[in-house]
Length: 277
Image (cartoon, rainbow, N blue to C red):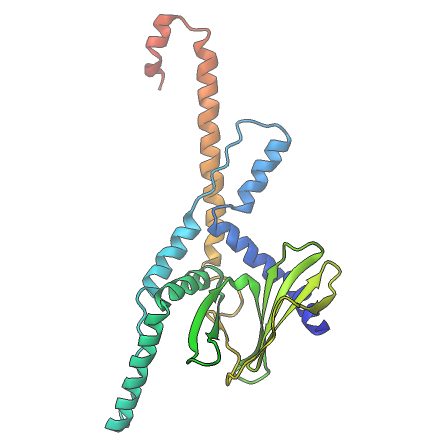
């Protein structure tokens, strides 16, 4: 458990985690760059002080994700050398898979994961089962906020996920995080307090799992770094936000100037103000 606490502490204090949080701000149209300028002027009581962050990043992400992840259908990868029986078996498998996904409303999950993967270059899903131990278990898939997921891989040439660690902020007093440790054969929950001490979460019953591999899935573009695919446009968004906010300030300044000028004008001069443009 102490190793889990150390992994969690390292992750939430990492540059990558802060990067993901910053990307979330862009998606929510809360550009930290323009907010910093706004707060600085606010502290110095400078006016006008408009803050107009754009929704460009979320528009870009949602448009791309809508194109890529709408109405996904899973089909067999056929081989020319396969026999007719093998093709029929694969066809039956894909039909069963699509039927299962339709039953659990996978379209919604696909879109959630697609938006998050496009936004963060990191998506996360957890496969789990529900049942009463008597009737047939139901397989389900849930999309998880990727900022909450820490994946631990093995050292193979093509690394596979050994463990998935889900990290959720806690509202409980003196408890910083509730952590789910998920492996192929177990699902255990822990609580981490404000001093980074870890203990079993007694509110959760540990589960024995029987998967062939860890049921946590990570999605990314496998680029040379962990940056989002749209990392290059962030500078343009900053510039656009500064430009629009600056224009709004200039309009306010112009309105204030015209108001002050009009106070010293005669009624006849005011009628001809449109000619000043």
